[in-house]
Every structure is written in structure tokens, then in C-alpha cells.
Amino acid sequence: MKGRASLTHNPILHLIIFTTIHAYITPSYNQPYLGLCPTWSNSGITFASNSVLSGEPRRLFINTENSIYVSVDADQVLVWSEGSNIVNLNISNNVTGPFGIFATIDGYIYIANSVPNRGVFLWSPNGTNSTKVMPNTRKCSALFIDINNTLYCSCDIENQVLKVSLEPGSQNQTTAAGKKNVNGSTSDLLNSPIGIFVDRNLSLYVADSDNDRIQVFLWNELNGTTIAGTGASATINLKGPSDIVLDGDGYLYIADTGKSRIVASGPNGFRCIIACQVGMGSASYQLHGPFSLSFDTYGNIYISDRSNYRIQKFTFINQSCDNTTPIDSRTTSSTDTVTVSTNSVTSISTSALVLSTSVAVTDATSTMTTTTSPSSSIPTTLVTSFLPTTVSNHVDTSTVQQGTSFASLFTPSVCASPTVMGPNCSLSTLSCDSLRPCYNNATCMNDNTMLSGYTCNCLLGFNDTNCQYDYRPCQPDTCWNNGMCNQTSNTSFICICANGWQGEHCQTKVNYCENITCFNNGVCKTLSQNYTCQCIGDSYFGRHCERTSTIIAIAIVALFIIIMDVSTYVFGIDPVKSVRRELRRRPKYKTKKKEKRFIVIQRPIYVA
Ligand SMILES: *[C@@H]1O[C@H](CO)[C@@H](O)[C@H](O)[C@H]1NC(C)=O
Ligand SMILES: *[C@@H]1O[C@H](CO)[C@@H](O)[C@H](O)[C@H]1NC(C)=O
Ligand SMILES: *[C@@H]1O[C@H](CO)[C@@H](O)[C@H](O)[C@H]1NC(C)=O
Ligand SMILES: *[C@@H]1O[C@H](CO)[C@@H](O)[C@H](O)[C@H]1NC(C)=O
Ligand SMILES: *[C@@H]1O[C@H](CO)[C@@H](O)[C@H](O)[C@H]1NC(C)=O
Ligand SMILES: *[C@@H]1O[C@H](CO)[C@@H](O)[C@H](O)[C@H]1NC(C)=O
Ligand SMILES: *[C@@H]1O[C@H](CO)[C@@H](O)[C@H](O)[C@H]1NC(C)=O
Ligand SMILES: *[C@@H]1O[C@H](CO)[C@@H](O)[C@H](O)[C@H]1NC(C)=O
Ligand SMILES: *[C@@H]1O[C@H](CO)[C@@H](O)[C@H](O)[C@H]1NC(C)=O
Ligand SMILES: *[C@@H]1O[C@H](CO)[C@@H](O)[C@H](O)[C@H]1NC(C)=O
Ligand SMILES: *[C@@H]1O[C@H](CO)[C@@H](O)[C@H](O)[C@H]1NC(C)=O
Ligand SMILES: *[C@@H]1O[C@H](CO)[C@@H](O)[C@H](O)[C@H]1NC(C)=O
Image (cartoon, rainbow, N blue to C red):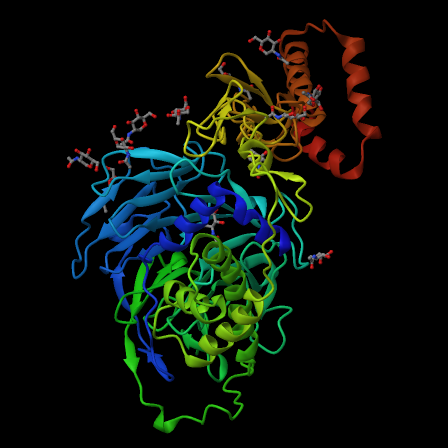
């Protein structure tokens, strides 16, 4: 806390903090206020079917103008304007295996591709050109932009959520939750994170699908709290949740993918709201693997009903609360619906607000030399900038109280020289020392001619203001499946693949049967690094079923003998007398079964 306070002597930080507080962006997604007893239609309306999608729908996004954005596995992103059933925009050039999508208020579209054209791209509203904005990502299964203009990517295959500020010329990509390539169920780990949501307090909600839970990470914290599913106290059982959305009141809406239903929290705890009765299916009141959900401005819920290859719309019904149980009575409406303490959610939001407060206070105490006491003015500024006026009163009050006590902790110290700061005046205020702004081993130079106060000299392969952009051909995950990356020039690479893998990124398994012909109708099967021919019956053998078994060989010999016998009896010649005797004796040592078959073949000899 003291460290933060003393940083107020740094003019650059003033600038950043000032910008931060005043530059928060208006959300482009919908968080409708739904009242205390919202319900939705039992039956969904198919908004888009497979004939339009021509593939599995993945992520779904609806902006505040009710334009609907859907990423489809058929390498395309489709956009519908409000009220239109016809696709208004079809982005398919350079779109490969799209997952995460997010549209901004001015119609720009972020699309996360997977292989081969990996990365997060920003597309112009007309879908004609794109710019790569998050290069070092494998596959963002979901994207989100918070009100501080920070882009989040949840990477399920790497078990982490990444974030990068979209403010011009700013930060490196960092981890927001989870540990790269480590899965687990402790508070600091994730297991296949999919859907993400960042609320107005900058708390990050993660649908931690393989842990069957929803985690929330307070701003800048790497340890999360389970608020629904496995490990949360008395909520609801989830199976592979893959999306999480918050409404205006901060209640949760979860795509409970494995159970093919949508569940939500409310004043009485968790309950199922859509597709609750009969399990998965393709009827209008059912879902099959719902992967993503989104509100429009009216509170209707659209669902990417992935395994039914359709987008379903469930209409919001503003039900009166008259027939329902009072708020404080604890209810259990279905077997795994249990009452939750809404307190836990509230307290999380509140402490997040306090974190934000520290930033606001730092700014105000240093830049504004007004006589207003911080305790009365600051929390109000904070609340108005971070929260819409409609947020319930108890949150406001607790924020103000905690913010007040927090503000009184600040006692900015004064050092003799303007180039030092800190509790003991031992820290440098020079930008390079205090900010350490250059990444990737770049050299930092203090430079008063720059607004930032420094310049970074990047190593080859890195650029951007802070050298955070890594365009080396060999990235840590350029070559997959333990392939080795060999940089062959400033812009090209070759993957040296491990045994059994091939392709530019070693992404495909070698098909060992590719050029193999198994003879005599044998079937080729791949082994781990080899192949084998499975021969038909017991008549053929050999690596390629090219050899015939002894019975057939003997049959051929027998045929030979017949010819010999015929020539002996008909023409009176016996060229191989001793050989023939030898061969006739041999079958007597065979097994009964084989002898029987042999006799069938032999019979003509004796008849003849
Ligand atoms: C989108 O464009 C792609 C490529 O041109 C095409 O194959 C696909 O059918 C289009 N989809 C729709 C819904 O128009
Ligand atoms: C589109 O192209 C222009 C000019 O080539 C470029 O400045 C811009 O960054 C590109 N991307 C988007 C998303 O507009
Ligand atoms: C599409 O948008 C980009 C950037 O916004 C612009 O440069 C381009 O001219 C537009 N193209 C069309 C066909 O409108
Ligand atoms: C697709 O990618 C190619 C090569 O990277 C690029 O030249 C082209 O402009 C891209 N097209 C769009 C629509 O972004
Ligand atoms: C907002 O983003 C800026 C970078 O643009 C960052 O320095 C700041 O810490 C962020 N603030 C919060 C509260 O996340
Ligand atoms: C910046 O990004 C690089 C990879 O691009 C990473 O190795 C490094 O740890 C990042 N720095 C910070 C401070 O997160
Ligand atoms: C975060 O969680 C990990 C694992 O559960 C634990 O070891 C660590 O102490 C926690 N850190 C904090 C700051 O709570
Ligand atoms: C930066 O330097 C450290 C230590 O010399 C080294 O381990 C690391 O690989 C370097 N990073 C880059 C991106 O060159
Ligand atoms: C960084 O380098 C990449 C690749 O050469 C280039 O596309 C990009 O425009 C550069 N960015 C800056 C800020 O120079
Ligand atoms: C990497 O490529 C260079 C040529 O570009 C070659 O000389 C070198 O042997 C390659 N390294 C490996 C490990 O194959
Ligand atoms: C099959 O033959 C092609 C063409 O000769 C070759 O490129 C490919 O590597 C072969 N596949 C296997 C598995 O040997
Ligand atoms: C594949 O299996 C055959 C027979 O089992 C063996 O002769 C051959 O060496 C194996 N090939 C490889 C690449 O292991």
C-alpha cells in the first residue's frame, strides 16, 4: 500500500492512472436488468439453423445494437443486424477454426483463430481487412474486453487466461488466471477454461469447464474463488460449463454444457432456467451441448446450441413475483438446486471496488491539490465511473465506507531530490529504473524528449514501444507435439518434427498406411510409429499379406501331383516317383481338422 502511495511522485504514473480512470470504455455487450423474478419461454425459436451455419456454431456475441455475431467451425464468422434473418456479413477470408469473438461499440470485431492462421485478429466493421492484435496465442476459446480496454483470451488447451491492454503502445501480454500448461483444481489453477466475463469491478469470471466450476478472480489476483459448481458451498452441480454471463444485477447465467441446460443465480440461489425438464435433445425446449450464451437488450437469451447445429432464442418474460416465494425463504426447486449465499458475490464485488479505489485515491491525492477531504470526494468519483447508477444501494454504501478507511491510510512522503522516491527515498524515479518498461531483454534508455520518459531498443525479432511484440519466426509454440523449431531466416522457420508427426507445425499425425498396399484384401492399421497389415482368415500372412498359408501351398502341390498322376496313368510316364511318395505320406501327420480338408483335395487322386 505504501509503495503504491509513494509512486505518486512519478509523473508518468500520474498520466497512466489519470488516463485509466477516465478512459474506461462503454461496454458493447448487454447486461440487462431483469427484475427479481425473471423467466424465459419454455420453447426456443431457431434463429439460425444448420442450413445457414453449415457447421457447428461456437461463440456467440450480441452487441448493444442487437447485432448477432457467431463463430462457426466451418471457418467463418457470421453477423446479423437486429431484426434480420439474413446474414449481413460473412467473414471467411483468413478465418481458420474461429472460436472467441467480441465486437466493439463501433463495430470492430475481434476474432480468435486456431491453426493454421493462429492469433487474435481485429477486423474492420465491413470485414474487409484485419490486423493481428494478440500474436502469441494458440486458440482463444473465448474473448472479452473489460471497461479498462483490456482484452482477455481464455486458452483452454494451455489452461490459462491471458490479457493484454489495447491502449495504444502499451503492455505485454500477461497471465490473468491459471498457469500455462498446468491443469489442476486448486485456487490458482484452471482446467480447460472456456467462457469468460469481466464485470465493472474488473473481476474475472471463468467457466473452468473440466473442473465443473465457475471461478472468480479479483482484479490482479491469481488466486480465485469458486462461486458455482464443484467446490463452491451449496450452489448447483455443473458439468463442463463453457460460458458465464452476468446480468445488470450481477447474477450469473451459466451454459451448463454437459447437462445441456442453462442455469442462473438469483436472490434465492441457483436455479435452472432453460431446458430444465428432460435432458439433452433437439426439441424446441431442449439443448444439446450449449456452448455460449448472450443477452440482447430486451433480456432475451440467445444460445449457441452447438451439437444441434443451431442458434436458439428464448424470449424473456417479465414475470411478477406475486406467485413466488419471498426472497429470504430458502427454496429447493429441483434436486440439485440449492440456496446460495448472495453475500459471497457481494463481498467479492466490494473488495474489488476497494482495489480500484486505491488507484483513484493515488491519483486524486497527488494531482488535485484541492482542500476537499479525500474521504468524502473520492469514493463518489469512483462509484460513478465504475458503476452504473442503478446498482443496488448496499454495494454503494459498503464501498464508500471501505474506500474511506482505505484513503486515510495514505501518507505520501517527500524526498529531497526529485529523482528519488520511496519510503526511504531509495527508489529512482527515472523511468527505466522505476517502470522497467522494456520487455524481452531490450535495453531501456531514459529519454526526456519522450512523453513516456524512456525508449526501448529492441533485440532482433521484437518491436513495438516496449518491445512486447514478438515476431520471431520460432515462437515457443510454433512447432507442436515436441517438434523442434529451426529458424532459417529472419522470417522463416522449419519444424523438425518428432517421430510420428508431420506438417508445417507438426500438427498432423503421420499416416503410416498412406502408401501401403496390403495384398489379398488385407487391411492396413497404423501402429504408434509403424503399420501392420491385418490379413483375411488364416490363408494369408506376411508383412503385406503377400504369402499364402501352407494349406493352399499344399493344395497347389496336390494339383501338381494330380497332373503327375494323370501323366503316369494316362501316358505311362512317372518322372518324380520318389518325390510323390514322400508328399503323399506327409499329410498323415497333420491335425484332424486339416486332414479332413486335405482329404477333400486329395480325393480326386484316388478316384482317378
Ligand atoms: C460465407 O462465405 C463462405 C466462403 O465464401 C461460404 O462458403 C459460405 O457459404 C458463406 N456463408 C453464408 C452463410 O453465406
Ligand atoms: C485495415 O487497413 C488499414 C490500412 O491498410 C490499417 O491501418 C488498419 O489497421 C487495418 N485494420 C483494421 C482492423 O482496420
Ligand atoms: C472497409 O473498412 C476499411 C477500414 O475501416 C476501409 O479502409 C475500407 O475502405 C472499407 N471497405 C469498403 C469496401 O467499404
Ligand atoms: C489474408 O492474409 C493475407 C496473407 O497474410 C493478406 O495478404 C490478406 O490481406 C489477408 N486478407 C484479409 C481480408 O485480411
Ligand atoms: C487499466 O489499464 C492500464 C493500461 O492501459 C493499466 O496500467 C491499469 O493498471 C489498468 N487499470 C486497472 C484498474 O486494471
Ligand atoms: C512479456 O512477454 C514475454 C513473451 O512475449 C514473456 O516472456 C514475459 O514474461 C512478459 N513480461 C511480463 C512482465 O509479463
Ligand atoms: C494461492 O493458492 C495457492 C494454491 O492453493 C497457495 O499455495 C497460495 O498460497 C495462494 N496464494 C495466496 C496469495 O493466497
Ligand atoms: C533474455 O535473457 C535471459 C538471460 O540471459 C535469457 O534466459 C532469455 O532467454 C532472454 N530472452 C529473450 C527473449 O531473448
Ligand atoms: C512489428 O513487426 C511486425 C513484423 O515485422 C510488423 O508487422 C509490425 O507492424 C511492427 N510493429 C511496429 C509497431 O513496428
Ligand atoms: C537448421 O537450419 C540450418 C540451415 O538453415 C541448418 O544448417 C541446421 O543444421 C538446422 N538445424 C537442425 C537442428 O536441423
Ligand atoms: C507416401 O508417398 C509420398 C510420395 O512419395 C511421400 O511424400 C509420403 O511421405 C509417403 N508417406 C509415408 C507415410 O511414407
Ligand atoms: C515396422 O515393423 C516391421 C515389422 O514388424 C519392422 O521390420 C520395421 O523395422 C518397423 N519399422 C519401423 C520404422 O519401426
